[in-house]
Amino acid sequence: VQLQASGGGLVQAGDSLRLSCAGSGRSFSNYNMGWFRQAPGKEREFVAAINWSGGSTYYADSVKGRFTISRDNAKNTVSLQMNSLKPEDTAVYYCAASISGGPYYVAQKAIYGYWGQGTLVTVSS
Image (cartoon, rainbow, N blue to C red):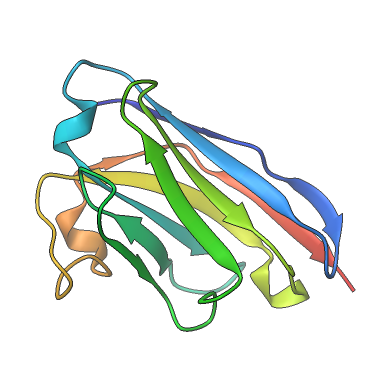
């Protein structure tokens, strides 16, 4: 599956932004999807994930209550609604796809075999 992330931009603290990830291929609904982010000089970290059906979602503690992940399998898209943005949310955001899943593994980069190109989110204070 090929992934294309979009929706990044420059916003102020407290603003909202919605990222989208478009997937190619008819098997998109077979994949568990995740969002990761990488700030300058830091490791890529888990943000959120959603299982293949959309019935289960997972979040990093740092974004819980502010970010919402969702998917539309009919449109081959996964979205990340980001509210109450903070300067520390500044990063390049990547969407990723994995055949594997489950609550114990979704935060692990290694299970994701497909990655989008990333979209930059900058939050000014």
